[in-house]
Image (cartoon, rainbow over all chains, first blue to last red; front, top):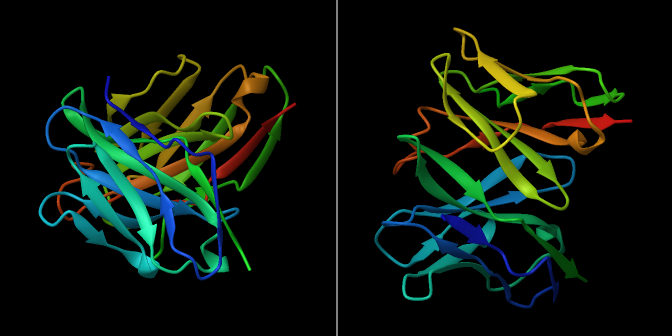
Length: 115
Length: 116
C-alpha cells in the first residue's frame, strides 16, 4: 500500500538549534513529495516539494528537505530554529488512484521551538 | 488574488442532523479536494472534484457526499451526523490536480464541525 509515515508526534528544539522533522514514504514509481505547515486555526501552507533532480530541496521560511531514495525518506530541516516555526508539519506524497493523482498525508508532527 | 474560502468557519450540530460545507477555490482553479483532519488520524482524503465530476474518493461511508458547480465552487454534505464526524474539514484547490511539476494544493482555513 502507498503511504507516508511521520514517526514522531512531537519534536522539541531550542531556538537557534538545527531542527529535523522526519518523513518516510512507500510508493510505487518515482515519488513526488511535499511538506506543508499548519499554524493554529489556519489551513495548510505549502513549504516545498521534490519532483526530480537535486536531492536537497529549498523552500519557504528557510526550510529545506533532503530526499534519500535508498532510505525512502524526505526529512525536513532548518539550520537554525525560530520560535515562530512552532506549528504542525505534514509530509505528503502524490499517488495515482483511479487514474488520477491525489495527495496522501502523514499524521503530522508538532514542532515546538523553545526560547 | 483571493485564496481558498471556506464557509462557515464553525458549525455545531447534534447527532442525526445533516450539514453542508462550502468551498470557493482560487479563481481559475478547477480542482477541489476535501480532507478531514482529526487529532488522531491526521488528514484523511475524502474526495476530489474536477469540472463538476468526482474523480477520486477516499474510504468514507456514503453519508459523506459532495458536488461541484460550474463555477468550480464545491459543497460537501454529511448526513446523519455521528459524534465521530467532529473534525476540521479542509478544502484545497489546484489548477488540475495533476499535481505535476508546477502544481500544488492551496488550502482554505477549514470548517470546524462539532457534533454533540
